[in-house]
Image 1 (cartoon, rainbow, N blue to C red):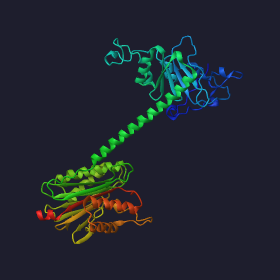
Image 2: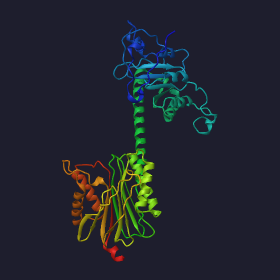
Image 3: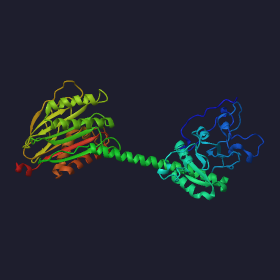
Image 4: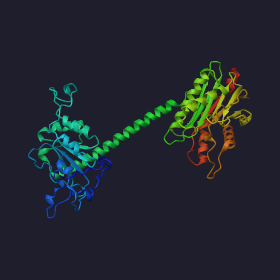
Length: 473
């Protein structure tokens, strides 16, 4: 009894466009012509039955004629008449044809090297697809679905091109087959080799194009959903009733992302205090971005609940320790609480760069950072002292992440640093820039000095108390 030779499952040929070549050790294939046969009698383009496809005798060797395309013909022809003529592809190579007489055989022959299916719509369906087909408008009023066999094949082979075969007197049925999902339809009584070869190539290319277009549309939809999700995760400041002006700039280090490991927020509590925060989770992947969102939401909830200073940061560290994916992950943070009169502020630093403050008649400078505590997640039981600073009647306070100061200057290894950033902001303030314009100019100049996009996330928050706000007090 012949030993079945298993087919190797590989990358679907319908997607890659190349059928795997037959191995000479696996026995002769249908592409091998017997010595002395005429090319017109070459069995390459004759139909393969189930036994030929799966039970090839082993041990014979011969030359293999390579093929580019493989066609699976599904038709019920008890007489075994050759429905499909000899087929040649565009390169002059024969197109391999397999034949299945029912859907059970077709499922066995539908291997990954099949590129196209030619389905005779006259083939009987195995069973009614839906008992109540007359309720969905696909079939006739008696519940019979004339395209049930096509629907079954489309479900069986969703990645393969399908050609529907019908009679010339039933063109409407062929058009309905295309509407259901076939790539094209052909008339049985007008079939010839040239027409069928061209139809196969067209169907394969159309299926490949449709699949690529569908994947592209799905990718665009996922990208839009991701953008909406990330945009929704950026904070909306809660400053109702405050005279302070707010501006922010955010640039993630990840390519094509809207959200990175940097995070910020600003809220005003019922007592009139304005709380501002900016932080940075080490790393800039999606996991770090998600952790940054969790810390920001936790900070807002704790702040609105009345916590501040060391108590708030200690609770945030607990959140970080429970939510981080790795014990090595930490986060830096700067928290500022501005008194209701706007003239004083409390400052807590957890391994984070100190904010910059500027006022009329005084050059921009960094707030004190001598009592900078450790980053969140580094030391269990750590403490973060709260420093009291005087802001004055009119001022601008800028909070930022280290992505703003760690960019390079020119082509060398020198970095901008805090001193370089302070000098830059002084020049821009002297030029009259304020608010959004100041932040935009700052980030753009940092990028220009770096010679291109920054490798790290960048977040900058600016709070301004103007002379008008000071007089209103």
